[in-house]
Length: 337
Ligand SMILES: [Ca+2]
Image: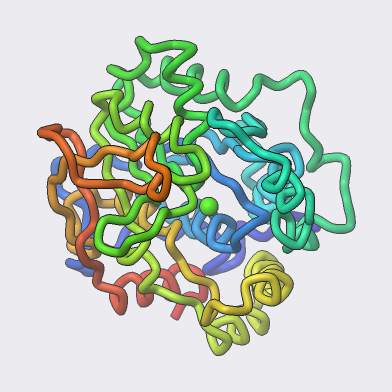
C-alpha cells in the first residue's frame, strides 16, 4: 500500500474549495483552512472512517491531530493510521486515549465490548497487520495530544468530536485553562426530539456533562437529524469500483461492517456533521437553534439522555439538515461525481 502515491490521483487528492457552490461556500471572513482536531471511535460504526476520509479530502480543513477513544482505543488507532497511510498523510499526529468512560462500567458492558463484532467489526481495513499502524508507546496519549494541539494553536483549533467525550473531558479536567483556548466543539451526539439516549452521550454521560458545562461553545449534531444521510448499497458498489485504492478499501470496510449493523439501511453518516460544520459553521446544510441542554446523569430510566434545561446560551443543536445537499457534497468529494 503506497499511500503517498494515492494523493496524486484525481479525486483521491485534496479537493479545492468550490466557491460556485453557494450551499457550502465558506464565509468570506473565515480564515481557511480551518484547524480541527478529530476525536473518534472507529471500528464500531463505519461513519467515523468515512467522515475522516472526507475531512482529509477537503481543503477547507487543516486536520491538526486525530485521537481515538473507547476500548480498544489502540486497536481503533490502527484503523486511523492505515487510513492516513492510504492517503499519504502520516504527518498528522495521532494518539490513542481513554479506554473506559468516566462513569461506572459494569461486567455486562465489558462482555459486549469484548466481542469484536461489536467494537472492531471492520478491522479488516487495517489487515494484514502492519507494524507501521501500531500504537507508538513513545507518543503522548490522546488527552495530552489534545492539550498540546490546543496550546500550540490558542483560539484556533475546533474540536470535532465523533465519539464519546471521555478524552475531551479528561483534557478539560487535566488542564482547565485550555477551555478558553478552544473556539468551539462540534460534536455528534444527543437527542432532543425522540425519547432515547444517544450513544456518544449515554456511553459517557459524566464526560458529556463536563463538556456541556465547560462554557466552551458547543454545536450538537443530534441523532434524529444526523441520521438522514445514508450511504446505501448502490453508493457502496460505486465506491467498490472506483479507481482510488482508498475508496475501494472503504467500500470493503462498509461491506464488513454492515452485517454487524444489519438493521441499518446502509452507512448512516451521523459523524459527518461536525466535519461539515467545521468547513462552514454558518452554512445551510444543517439548521441550528440555540438551546440550553443538560445531560441527565442521575435518572433511573433516562440517565444519559440530553434534555432542554436551564438558561445556557453557549449550546446550539441541529433541528434539520439538507440531506440531498450533504449527500451531493460527499459523493462529489469522494467519487468525483
Ligand atoms: Ca463515531
